[in-house]
Image (cartoon, rainbow, N blue to C red; front, side, top):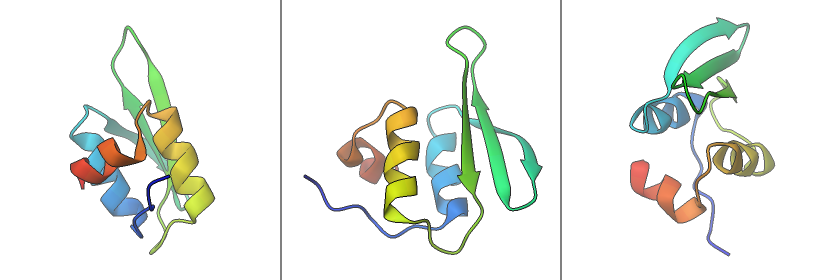
Length: 74
């Protein structure tokens, strides 16, 4: 299994932006991203200085990526 990088919420948002995710809205410290109209996906990313490993792994899985693919986006 690949090592997860230590990243902030804003770094995750920037990386997912390369896949077409756009900021839909923000509620408190959580940024809600959306992608596309046909295969509609919505992700919630906490706007924290460092995202917990389990949370990051869940975001990567929900985006349909592997850890290696996500690392290349950073």
